[in-house]
Image (tube, rainbow, N blue to C red):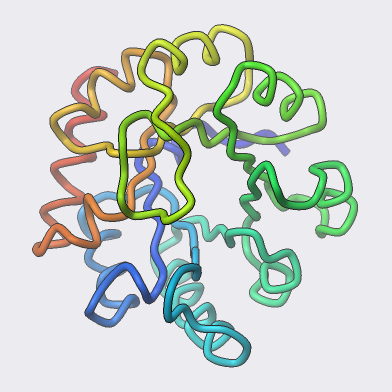
Length: 214
């Protein structure tokens, strides 16, 4: 099933370590502000594991279900299946895309993080449904973030693949438009919403920044 590009316009990523408030509350506010897809990413210092990770996942999945927002799980195939997620997102160090697709129920999407043209082309060839490209700019949200690839690399990647691209890394309302113009289908953020204070307004401002130029 082909992935509808419209759902990738404003891609919000969140885990318990990214906010001091109830993640389900932050997610609900972000949905009301206009996010179009959500990824549960429970990683980093003091991240939940086991039952705690599953319990939070159920809560966030239910929030997405109630609001008709696609729910993606980061780098945990078994959890994605348990939660009946719409898809999973994997990185370059994770399991091979082809093997991941073999393990997933039919219809679940696979997104792949890439930072080079070669990685992007290979991911598309192996069956990725969309690409997470970045980091475009510097970010402190992810401890293991790579060096920024810049707008020029984003443009180059967008010209070499046909599947949708979601840009990530240091994205704010002030630079969202430039990123969409560079060939991204949408933008992906963590702290731009989770650390924005007023989550609903932060999401709305980002959504407007992407929509104006399309």
